[in-house]
Length: 469
View 1 (cartoon, rainbow, N blue to C red):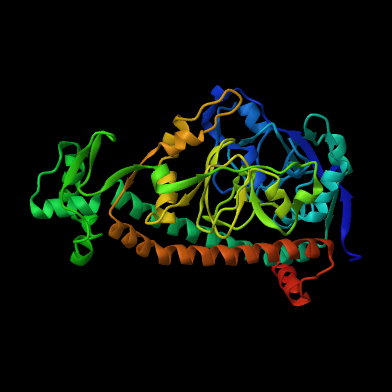
View 2 (view 1 turned 90 degrees about the horizontal axis):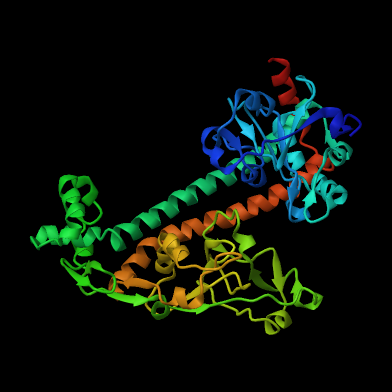
């Protein structure tokens, strides 16, 4: 530990605020580091999705280079303040958001490894420093005076690289699992769209039987005739194909053609709609760390998984009784109905929510997955029926009255069977990732503080590599 260095941030970094531009200057131009890019990522994404129209002078003044640290400088709560993200490469012509601060190493040869410092700034050690020194008026904020008093702590470069290597391996596996689950979810959604939106199996059957295709569906039918590869879903599985009808009927309420024998119902027919509530925050006895799982929309902000077991805060049995929150069963589809509209997740266990949700408990014969995919496919439509002056909200009556196509029960069972293995694999990946994330978050402060040391042989290997460069 005697080799570790601790300095004030202003001894190591220059501070710079980002750009504030009008809305009409976004959506085109050059890469732009957004508040969300910084808030949700230890390291900046390889590609910046947000664009801003910037001048050469702005690009030079607010450039983004390897080793730059970005901190959120203002937020509504202390917990969201000073969240960091580090650039691991130079971003040509990119600039950054005015609600963030850029910390750029003062010397080009400063002995700080960017991959290490990305973990340092996300450690509980640094996060506690930020919250203890930050100021709060109407919003929490970080200014240059506060930043200059914060500390940065680092060992020699070989050990920095070794620490970053250990934590990076965990992050690599976490990211791999995330990508795998994204692929699995894309597969599940593609099957839902194929069967219940594009009606591919029914079109295949109608074409094979020589039945008349409604004019409104002819374009899709012609496409399937001209591109045989798109028919591979059921064309080689006659037994499965036989479960689907081979003709369509017109439904006035929907104003479109649907497969024969399928029904048009409402969300109220297909599920039980459940609202939520919040126990009084003035009563400590209503909240606990390990009680009844309770969610707010904030718990799903930036949440990348399909299933959820609990939020940041639990409530007690008394808190449940003293509020309008209702305990819902495993498999309920949780849907945020305001601030914002459209966060969706599946309850992994019994759970309740605050009033920002209108959740769906599936009725018999309607699978959880079907409701989940339906809501996911119709978020924009649901948003269009929302109202409100302060913020938009979907009312219970509007959501209950939303029309939903309900296929025959045997097809619902087929769909559930098809996606079961995919969902099981997705959940296994998710649980493994939660374990890995907990391990990383436990190990990170121990490594950053020097309480746990990387084995000497690993440090020596990085030292030899660096000496040979």
